[in-house]
Amino acid sequence: MSGRKILLQLLPVFIPLFAFILAYKIWGIRIGLFVAIGVGIGGLIWYWVKDRRFDRFILFEFARSYIMRRKLAQEEWLPLLNSKGEIIGKAPRSVCHSDKSLLHPVVHLHVLNNNGEIYLQKRPMNKLVQPGKWDTAVGGHISYGEDVE
Image (cartoon, rainbow, N blue to C red; front, side, top):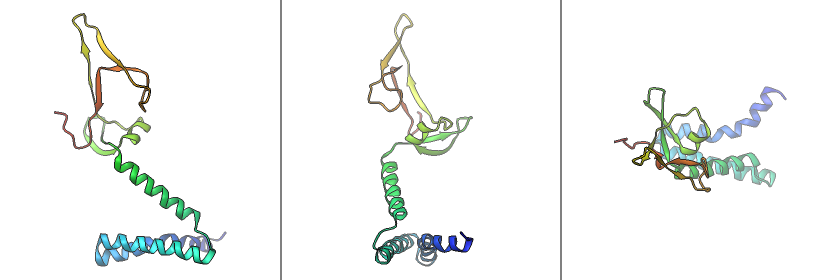
């Protein structure tokens, strides 16, 4: 397949982006977003009228991005730290737990009795991380924007 043919097939995908950039420069971000969404919906309608079917990729991408936005909006956001303990960004809790290289602050409380024995709790089986394992008495994440003090 030639580069020209590939470009012609990809061009409709970029039309909402071009519409957004143009509208953003003229009227601002809010109108730009509405224009881009309108052009995208117009593209879906055009595909339906032309082929009597929706383009599966466009529908899949729309559904995937909608689900991800909803999921991330409900998630706890954690600060990301560098090796010196300085905040360098933020990420959703699920991302922090799926990538072990992302450092994020946690707090643990160790409770000892007079004999120096440590009290532990057994984590419930419905926990996403380390279900059914023994853990410190109290622990948790420090949320993004929350002060350690």
